[in-house]
Length: 547
Image (tube, rainbow, N blue to C red; front, side, top):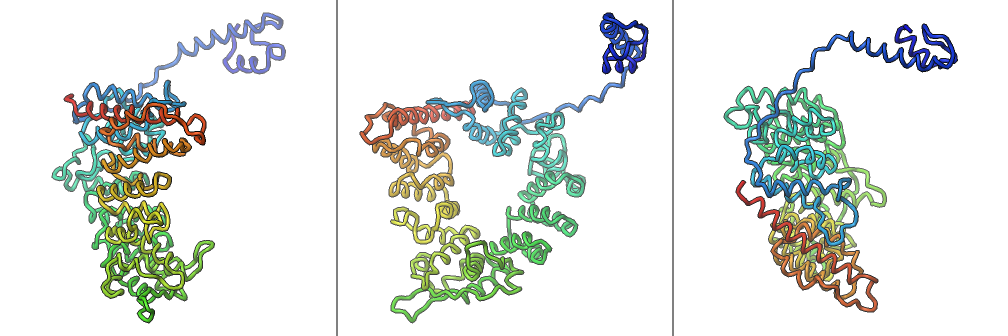
């Protein structure tokens, strides 16, 4: 039986009852004959195939000069990576077992702090974990080192690694780890390194350009600004907005001329961002213009028996205000005048107010009564200004005492605002304030505040959290409402506090009005917390061992 491959395919598609294979009589023997002919033709085609030139082998993976992990730490990494959802043993109800995947960010931070290199065999699982969790990517890519980019070029699932850092050879001096590029030290970069940076800036993918600008800004703010200015007029509006945001890092008075120019940008969002950045520079011309406008709206009324703050909100949003970033149209439910007032006060330097109010301190200014129900609007604007200008003095005044009856002080209008104000304080002061807040108000409103505290929690804060959990347990409180705080404590409580939990591991007697099964849940949760703390202690000890 003979026939071309096309004839055989046609017969197979139509069926041997409708098309007899070449050289074969119709009948029941036609189907086997067709298969035999296809096998012979396949072998003939393969035997006559001219071998193609083999593909070029990929370049070798770059060397990672960092020291290897200690053996115990390498085994721990394998265990942590194996606990991902979808892997054997990962996910599902854990009972008293620690959530290992939630410990991976801390493990990576500790390993990066000690300058260890990732084990080559762990890189695929590490990149898979970072692919599924964007919050892991910066630490995971730093730990993976130069080989992450090498692997990403061979597997499209890991292409995020190519977007996470500048391309090899274009990393600014001191800003990253470009193995083998010759740009890893400031002295070696020279004109050749600068040319590679300019080339990537002009020809790179958008994500690569963002990463390059951020890395260069962290190393040399002026050079990053000059690089951005070189192509600014030709960039798309959405790209200009993203690039402009990078100037938040290392913002300084030298950035003012560029930002003033951006106030005339075609894009409203770009203009707004430029105005926000300028208002964070108290000595900028924009800050001075905003201070002058805000002072005409807010003053001290001395005609009353008790001095009070008088507010006369703007009656219009003129062209100058719009140019300086004031949005003319308020969101739904907001009045125009209060909307304009809030933006003016928010952008005005906080240093202008003590003089306006007769030399009073921020605490004394915040304590003044405000006429005509403008207090909440004025204090909310001062809160935003304190956060934008990183003014710890005003933040303390607006937070007030943590034990204040209003659970946050005179100027904090929400938990989110309080959390942002706390972020302007030092770590120790922040922890002490939150500990005092928990002691006075419990844990029900403290979750957001705990999230801005440095890890591990300072001893006073850790004790306050454990004591509040113990009180909630003894009171028969609904236990699942504290699961978020429990999870946060597993990651943030100092491992040295594990011993204080031993007395809380037994199942307590449940009050009559307690939620059914609450005692068992509390015991299980405290057992998981204690186990996790001891695991974290072992984890850090393993990383301190000699490789």
